[in-house]
View (spheres, rainbow, N blue to C red):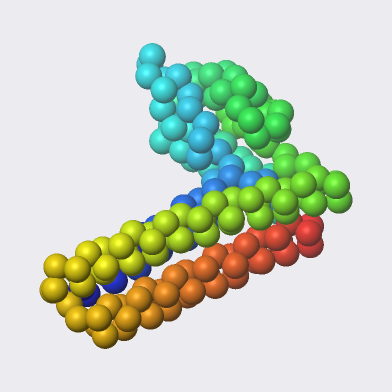
Length: 184
C-alpha cells in the first residue's frame, strides 16, 4: 500500500512540475529564456531546439540575447523565431539576435491571468485523476482481503491529504504567476 501512496505523490508532483513548465512559456513582460524552449531551428536538415545551437542570455530585464554557436545559421534562427507563436520580431546585427520583450498592456495581462487559471485547473484535474486511481487501487486491495476496512479508510485519508497538499501547491504557484503578470 505504501507503493500506492508513493506513486500517487510522485505523479502529483509531476503535475506541478508540468504546470511550472507551462507557466514558463507564458510571456510576462520580462525576459525569460524558457520562452524559446519550443522553438525548433532546421540545422543541417534536422529540427534542433534553439537552446542546443545557441547560447541565450538576459543582459537586461526585457531583452533576450541569442548568440549562435555557428554564425551561418543566424538567418535560420531569425526565421524560426518569426514563424513561432511568441509574437516577438527578432533583430540581428549579423553576430547576435536580440529579442526585446514588449511591455504588456493591462488587458493582455488579464487575458494571460485567465490562461494561467485554465492551465492550473488542468493541473488540478490531473491531480484528481491520480487521487481517483489511487483510491481505486486501495479499494481493490481491500476487496482481495490484502488490507482491512480500517486500513482502507486510513489509506483514503492519506491519499486525500496528499491530494490536498498538491492542490494547495498548485494554487500557490498559480497565485504567484498571476501576481507576476498583474504586477508588470
